[in-house]
Image: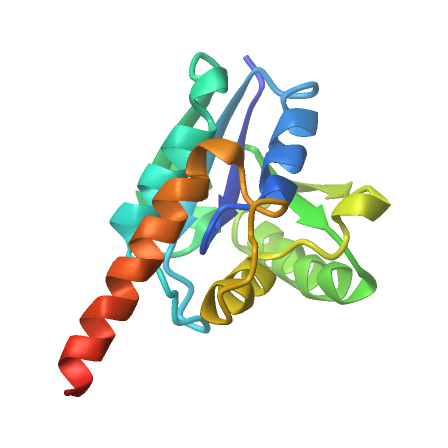
Amino acid sequence: MLKAVFPGTFDPITVGHLDVLRRALKIFDRITIAIFENIQKKPLFPLEDRLAFISKSTQVFRTKVSVETFEGLLSEYCKKNQIRFVIKGLRALSDYEYETKMALINREINPDLETIFLVSPPEMATISSSVVRELLYFNGDISRYVPEKALQPIIAAYKKLQSGKLRNNN
């Protein structure tokens, strides 16, 4: 069975993430979506919310996709779970530069690890979790950018976060 990991912060999951997952499932028998805390990013949504958004969005793939959280190095996670392939989506040249560096470091730590890059189609090139977070902040419509099953949970979670911030600031 050919296994891969699709790592990321998924803050929140987007239709771009699902596009990468769908295409990767044509190559791999089993994919683990691994949600991790990136020390360089400060996520908007708590880990539990991101896990719930992804679980709802990937129910249709439940026999081929699992969702986990992890801490630490991706290369060590893969070694521990006997995963030899990492899936990464690329939208632009800047993604390629960053992800290539990460792939090289991961392979240096774990020589058996290969990274597979899937280039986004043009209609997905502008979709990112950052865009979704900014639209949420300005009360914009995110329905085009997030999976249908996660839309209302993301909006509800954001409103809950905002109401908590308002209470804490008064």
